[in-house]
Structures are given as structure tokens and as C-alpha cells.
Image (tube, rainbow, N blue to C red; front, top):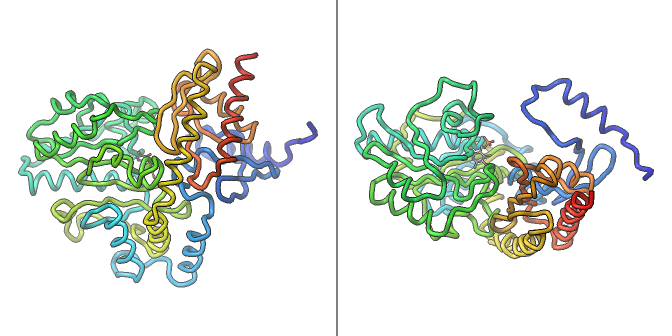
Length: 408
Ligand SMILES: *Cc1c(COP(=O)(O)O)cnc(C)c1O
């Protein structure tokens, strides 16, 4: 091989020198990107099979999203919510309609949208359900990932995410994921909400057992509890439907959205719910300087338009079959198990062969960027614009990495 690293080692060292070490990135320094492909500072190309943890569902620099952003940059970028701007209503209307809900509340990051859902659920509990002041509790699942704020890490079961960040916010009950009976038992008269990921992403793309989400819905309805679906990573086309929870024919009371809602350009998040829920908020009780800003709304509107066509959901469903068939064929050849839906897969690699981290390093050397979750599990989530040929190339790289590890 005549290829020599040119700028990569220096750029990695410089990045490491000037930042807190709260990430352990793969040794790749990306300079530009288009669609499902990125190019590093030395001109090497990679298939992006992480897609910004699903923030890049429409690929890097989707032309419709980029042109909406450019047009908005030339007109108006920020007003604050002290004034209304001309992009606000269309974004909120289209997103509410996509969700089949009365109202939306736009924020910026996923964690802020989760915090918003928690605050709304508590207020709803006190004002509508009649829970005694300060007594509201929310049922959540083990191995959840809902973000990084102090309240959210209070109910994380991941020691890395939680330890040393206390004192913790009370008011959360943790139950095993996928066990509808345990969840029903945890609900009491002070429970205001159940907060779940319809598929647990960070936990390793865990799909709950059939009937689980429907049983949770039934419990919530019977006990007058809000069902909050955190679709930040699973939603907006990733699983072959607009929302992952649709696979179970379940409608939650509140959707929490983020990641792909910003089109890979700006952070855009939101909660969507009916007026009897989101209507509990009055002026001054919640807000965000940047939430629902003109640039975010212009991009977000274009994102919703892309989803309204249904083509991305269809692509994810169809290409997801190719992805899952290809990965399932590797079971027994270095792969222990494959989970997921659509263009989203958690792949358990034989821990005797490779850690997830090692697998991702070797995949990167073969031109595919992916991310380990825990132990020997890796997550594959390409942009929904990925082609059949790209998928074939990535699957061949996974097979080559496993074959090499098994031979060595
Ligand atoms: C990424 C993620 C979040 C947090 O979103 P941020 O934008 O990083 O704050 C919350 N929930 C789920 C399911 C996520 O995947």
C-alpha cells in the first residue's frame, strides 16, 4: 500500500489536545460529505453507517434541506419566541399533522425535548389527573437512553452515564424493558407517565417482544397515565415507518422527536401531543431562546415534507430487508445475533473474536463507519438515501472483518 496518512494523525492529536475527553472517537477526521458518503482530510472515502445516530436520516447535505437552509439564512435566522416569525406556523402545523396530534412544542436538542415531556407530564398529573403536589412519578425502563441532563441521568441504569452526577432527581421508577406485567405493577395512583423508547437504541437496538407496546398502551389508558414515546432515534423513517411505535399499531399520548428533525443541519427537537396534554403550559412556564427559530423551522418544514411523501419510509423498509438478510447470513460466522427494523441493526459479534470497538476500527479501515454500543455489539444505521450497492459494499466489509478475525 502506498497510501500514507497525511493530515489525519496531526488533526487527531490537535482535537485530543483541546477538548474534554467525553468521547472516544474512531481515528477518522472528516472534511466533507454527500449523501451516505464522507471524505476525510486525506481524501479517503467512507460509507457513513452511523448517520449521526440517525440525525442524518436524509443523508449528508440533502439538496432540498440545504436549499431551504440557504434561503432562510438569506432572510431571517432568529427572533426568539418573544415575536412570531413567518416560518413558525407552517412547521408546527405540518409536524403536528405528521404526528396526528393537535399541538407541538419545538425545542433544540433531544434532551431538552425529553425534559419538556417530563415537565408537561408532571404538570398534567397535578392539574388534570389530580396527583397530590410533589408526588408525581414516571415509569421508565432499564437500559434506557433519553439524554444527558441531570434529571435524565437520574433514571439511567448505565453507571458511565449516571455515577458521580448526583444528587439525583427523584420521581422515577425503573422497570425491566419488555416486561409489560412488571410495568403494570409499577404504575400507581401517582404515576403520571410511562416514558419508553419503542426500540432501545443505545442499549443495542433492542426490539421489545411482540405485544409489549400494545400492553403498555392498555395499562396507560386504564390507569389514566400518559404514554410518552421517545422516538428521537427510532422515529422519522429509521425503521421503515414514520414512527417505530407504528409497527405495533400503538398511538402514544406524546411523541418526543429530535435528531433527524433537524435534517443534519441544525438541532431541532419537539414534543407533539393533544391539547388536553400540551395545553397545560401557560406563558412563562417553559421555553427556549432558540427553540422554534426561523432557520430551524425552515429546515424542519422541509424534513416533514420529505417524510410526507413516504418514500424514505419505503426505502428504509425495502433496503432494511437487504441489510437484515445480509447480516442474518453471518450468524454462526462471527455474528451471534442481529436485531432491529428497517435500516437499523444491532449486531452482536462473537465476543471471543472482537469487541465492538475493535470491529468498528477494522470496519473503518475497510471504509465503513459504524459505532459500538456496549461490549461486542455494533450499531448499523446508514442514511436512508444509501443505495443497494452501498449496502452490499458495507455488508462485504462486515463479512471481511469477521472472516479475518476468525482466521487470525
Ligand atoms: C440521542 C437521543 C436522545 C438525546 O438527544 P440529544 O440531542 O443528544 O440531547 C434522547 N433519546 C434518545 C432515544 C436518543 O437516541
